[in-house]
Image 1: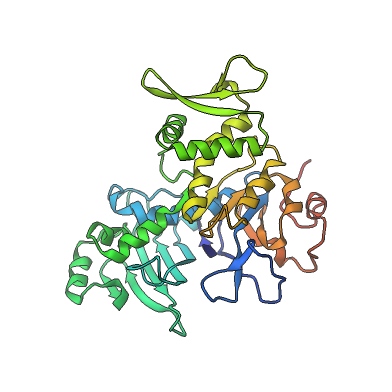
Image 2: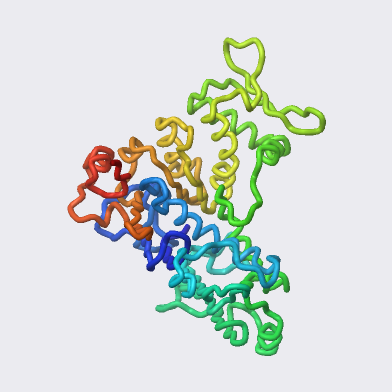
Length: 405
């Protein structure tokens, strides 16, 4: 679970935006929807986060910030050295010459050597990237990771890094002072320490990379796209996934009786059987909503099966609004979501607001100078839990709607 995100100077996000999903103890209990952020915690956070706002308001960039951080932790070691990292700063001369800053608070096992028996606890990852100058690569100004085990009153250092010449390691990292000296001499200035240590078979770094890999998304950080061939091949290789798709595609009433994956000229082809039709339809003959659901379903299914975080941009794209509450309910159902998976999604489907709690909704607005602001619906003063959120949103009471005319 991710329960707090801070972003500064990243795409349309200029000034620091703090997204704190924690819910206080006075908020009524909502089993399966507002859940303890870790074992024994009194603070809770939602399992579903829906981000609303006008087109180009910055909704996707909230998701993109998380996707970029997980990419950096997992893949930056293998990224070509000296190239600009795959993100944009706020596109003014002033902001390009300033640092970009990120902070992510998330939950992971207290003991990664025995995660199945270990309790969970908070982790705090921070990253600062240098200004950009024409013709030069950027570098890590600082990178750090702390955690707060149950026996500790305050966060404990796992590592702190300034540039690439100064690294301080805590006991949990399992790296000696001699090894730190070697690291300081070989680590690339534009690569994560975690990504680097994972290549050196450091057990904690490998576990943290695995945690980053548990974030699934349709947001592209680099130009590696999950195309239709890959999606269909995934179904062909995993009959349990295909069976789950056939179960859920009927429940959400897309008019499809069964999806089969056939082979044609060595490539997987989807075949859709419909009641009343003598012949099946192929993917291109199905509605955009059906095509979109089939493509995004593996992300949702894997996260629900294993735990982790799904970042889905425009989940409502071409999908009927009545389907979205059903998908959101999967994440509050302990049978469908036994490992506490979390869904972050951007959407425009206003009707979904009436199925959400105010703690589950983020609003994005863009000011006249192009900078995005992000706030929780629940942070707006005076909002009642029983309000008609959709009517109030459309009426402009919460912000985040397009200005027409």
